Image (cartoon, rainbow, N blue to C red):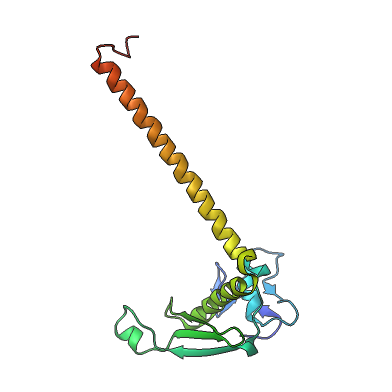
Length: 174
């Protein structure tokens, strides 16, 4: 990547030659990473507010390899080494990323995944990622419970309606 100040890459609008054009006048498109952080951290933090509290990676603690990917794609997959294998030496965590055909995007995504895994590794149950996951599971469970209650109410209503119509009492005329 480039040195400080870092031009934001992979923004949503107006990428030209790897440098984002400024869509909004008066707002700087140059992002400065925190002191002592690797240059790519600013790129990861620029678009996502959630990643600001994650563990910052030190490039000297990482071993990076580019290997051939696997899966569907035929010759395009078999002949290019665009799969990124990233190893964090102190913890021993290994991340393999082959989500796209671009090495740069795979490197970025591998580092984001590594940050998340290290956050869970070092913070454990208090990790923001696990907390968000538990909250979403609780919301899903509550939503499913409410849906099941509504289905049960509909079933009971239907049974009572059928019982009234078969007994000769028309509930519409009452």
